[in-house]
Length: 496
Image (cartoon, rainbow, N blue to C red):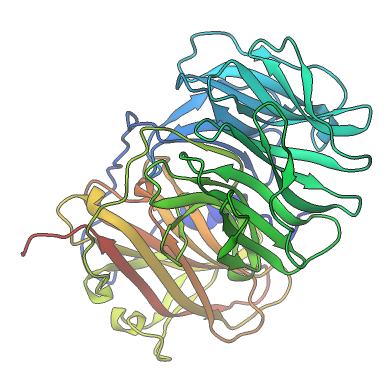
């Protein structure tokens, strides 16, 4: 059975792969990818395909703009919680070797440059998970279950000399540790008898342990404070506070325990990390109510309130994250946000048949709509348009953020009906679905997302946005598109 939050990768591919038809004018259609496979590595991330997480999982290395093509060699199983050694090459991670069985998680060691064969560090029938390195790189700290007790344990890099660092009270469980070199302290999440989590702090040798946060107002299993990570200087901790209604990204002062609430969502947050320049936080973000269901890599400026997706593609779920010392700072100066002119874009059919409308109908959510009738394809009824925007920048890498919004509706719903917004990925030669909504009626639906991914721009400085209606087989239907809007944020540009 397909879960409600899972994307429809096959149907998305079918809909977006249909040949473009008549063009309604505008700029050209450039398709040369930026494709910087030698981009400076800044992000080490585990990810798994939402539809088949056990068959398709990997550890990828990219820069902070989603460029690069490097992967850590992998084997059968789902990798998670990868962390980079201080030497910048070795990687420790957990792998779930049997699909859906947390007890099959063991720890493994690999490398970015392939200089040694992957090494298995633990081998048992209980959970070993969430590893991190000691600051000097000589030991690995992790959460391990032994005889029903989940505690923080350490071992040498080769898996030898395993020992308990901290044992929780009876019925409690410890996990998600992070070890900071500047403060020589460890922070972790501890679950109480009811499954409510609080953050704890201790010295590097396990002494002086004390509670740091109260877990918030929620109670019960899977609520409270999770996934803590130190700032490089050790003077701040970022973590996720979960409740029955959603999740909040939080900062905490380890000296006082004071908590600052930074970003709240009705969806999910996970695995936050401070960027080394301390100008933003990266994390996994899922917002199902907005049609952005999979946990995707996102970022939030330290002083900002608007999250931006670095990985817009809904096919992949983030399962681990670490950042590299070479991580670059955000641009110091930005131009004012600029709304691109849809009347200068190329608008063409992605699927279906044009009924009525002109490009200016897509300039505002004013009820003036472009209509496309559906066509039958693989027992589905599909209709859609492509909008190709020329980006007014000297170089595509000058683009810092794209805020994309579409307003559309269908005149028939029921069954497995979907409205979808995708952007072309010229590096991988596919369309990536960023938003997927189930229409609640035949009225207008708004789809939005923000992206900082250069993987979805071309060397010709173009962005292709696709709006698709994907309906069950039946009577002919219509897709009415009222707005396709792109707001660009870039570095300052010289006068034209």
